[in-house]
Amino acid sequence: MDNNTKKNVIWNMIGTTANAFNSLFFMIIVTRINGLKDSGIFTLAFSLACLFCFIGNYEGRVFQVTDVKADFSNKEYIIHRISSCILMMTIVVLYCLVMKYDFYKMSVTLALCFMKCCEVFSDVFYGILQKNDNLQQVGKSLFFKSIASIVIFIILDLITKNLLLSCLGLDLIWLIILFLYDIPKTKQHINSTEEFRVSNIVKLYKDGFFSFSILFLGVYLVNAQKYALDGVIVESLQAIFGIVLMPATIISLACQYLLQPILNTIANLYALGKKKEFNVLIFKSSLLVLVFGFACVIGAYLLGIPVLNILYGVDISNYKLCLILIIVGAVFYSLSTLISAALTTIRHTFVQFIVYSITSLFALFVSRWFIVQLSLIGASLAYLLCMFMQFLLYLLIYVFIMRKQEFKEV
Image (cartoon, rainbow, N blue to C red):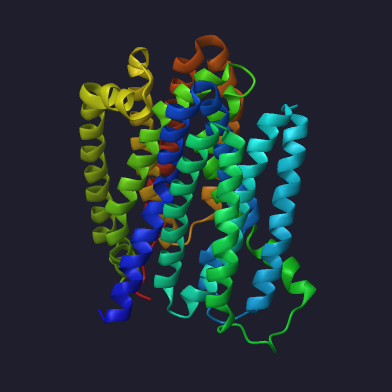
């Protein structure tokens, strides 16, 4: 591995990790400084921002970076991203109006969604940098934004005790780094003579639809219970659910780190036509996830609540069962992610869209009923059931496909 590749890998890991853990730090800050009511508004608004940002991101950086034949120009990707970001913010405003949010809740939601809008707009420039082997600059950008966001957020919130002003500070940070770092670093890789065709913008929407749908539904599924809680329970309980749900995000991220090193091996085994070895690797990886998940469940039972109480400065001792149910659900979600990677490798993606559609519809109709009947226990149980259903569908489809699929050396 040459020196530039090492820098790319290290900085990308640092930047991505810092950005992924931002929401955890924000939640801790808001809960400790502003209290549970503001924390409940924040956790819902941030979850909505994470969902709607996939409208802004649409086809995603993977689609852009893997466009090795240059079917679309850099300018077309940028203009497409501008249009998708405008679409994203328009939908956010309409959603807030339909949900009849008051001015404060709507303002916080718009501020956090705009931050995510800046993030996905930056991502189109990250794609250009990555295609030109400058992934380290992407990692540095994400790292600088993450650290600056935490510092500014803490300072503003400590001084003003105003959640909205603190969120607007995040918007300012992302805008400043976007225009002073991301765009200037990318300009040298954009040819001024590149063509731009409206038909290609439309084609980007068409070609990226299934990738967008899977990602969008995936984020919806993870946060479905948060959305179902909106308007049904008070903000303080929404905050508590956000606190017990946070470890699930960390478990999923940790499993990603466990799984990333084997992705190339999975692809190589498929390319070499080694079906048995392919299945053995998926089975062993599943066992690794289960062992890790079992350790997380034990750790959550013994230490989870005390640690969360210390981190957030609130007493959630009555919600241990919620935490356990959610962590078990997160383990099923991680197993689904592994099987999804295997199916993607052998190019079965449409069936995954079907799985996510079925599971998301199940979550949409079941979550609110469980919440109305059992409050946060119902939300946690609904989360577990949705994740188990997704895993079961993935497992059945994987077994069926593997019985029919012939591996040929490619």
